[in-house]
Image (cartoon, rainbow over all chains, first blue to last red; front, side, top):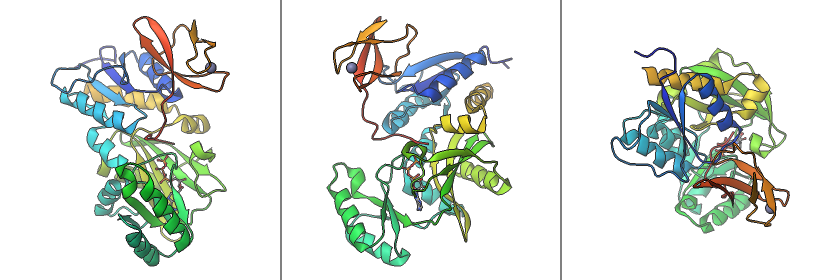
Amino acid sequence: MRCGSALVQVAVLHDIVRLEEKLLFNAFLNLGASLRRIYVKSSPIPLFRGGLSADVALQRCLSHTAAIESTFGLEASGIPVINSSFTLNTCLDKAWTASLLAKEGIPQPKSFVVFSLEAALKVASELTYPVVVKPLSGSWGALVSLARDEEELRTIIEHRMRLPGKESKAHFIQEFVRKPGRDIRVTVVGDEVVAAIYRKSRHWITNTARGGVAEAFKPGDEVVELSLKVREVVGGDVLGVDLFEDPERGYLVNEVNAVPEFKNVQRVTGVDVASAIAKHVVEVAKK
Amino acid sequence: MRVRCPVCGLPVEVPDDVMEGEVVEHDCGATLEVRFEGNAVRLVPLDGVADDWGE
Ligand SMILES: Nc1ncnc2c1ncn2[C@@H]1O[C@H](COP(=O)(O)OP(=O)(O)OP(=O)(O)O)[C@@H](O)[C@H]1O
Ligand SMILES: [Zn+2]
């Protein structure tokens, strides 16, 4: 049994230090935890038992590859990582996330994975235009496209097929959800929803990184329950759950972020997300 | 402390308590990332952000 957080050793794995990471470092220090920053671009990550020591680790790498691979290293030493490699891997792959959520009956936009233009056209004739095409993995709305007719779908898929890398040979296609000019980002820490925002935009892509405007929003029971159910499925202790409001079906889960940014959430809601995360991480270490 | 910008070659002022991984914008328009080399601070152009998480 430990008292306080004085003896808790927290490792934070990071690459670029954004405002979020600075807030987190300060939050850990304020709790009296012993903080070890691991800058993955210059620290070798051992993949064997005892290679690293810490009571708990928080994963904050911006690079998906660095996040997953360095998590494996800490897990090799038996260190609990928030979030685990399972959660990171799941959330990184939109098809994997959709599949796990679907098994548990969580409402989502109707989605398909396709590997050819021919298959994409079949999907579009089932869903009817417009349809949304996304890379299976990606962020900030990058490479997310809207095809309003067959002509546009052909252009998008043909472009994607010519991009280098295996990621552009598989496409995630889904129905276009008629959102009310906004979507919802719910921040989950442990088994609590700590904050939620609307991301508003006149454009259908609402990411704050793409000019969407954040606004505080007090989530009702339905949003809270849905977000926590998502957490039960994908696991994880710090998650950003993105929801759409569909005029007929209600809330739909768009995707889950396993290394969420929260500077806008914190700014507009006034909730100290960094401290909530730090407290929870220290709690996990004490268990 | 003063460090040379790898893009324009002019000096960049960075705080003494700067951390590895911090991002510095230089007047020339370059976005630079802080690296440590032994006791020295070095600036490198920020990598592309192709595979990142978002808000
Ligand atoms: N099926 C859809 N119908 C309507 N709007 C959508 C749909 N899918 C995505 N969008 C909008 O496009 C934007 C980017 O989508 P999405 O979040 O899936 O991409 P992303 O690159 O994974 O972004 P991030 O991970 O940063 O949230 C969001 O603002 C979302 O509201
Ligand atoms: Zn410069």
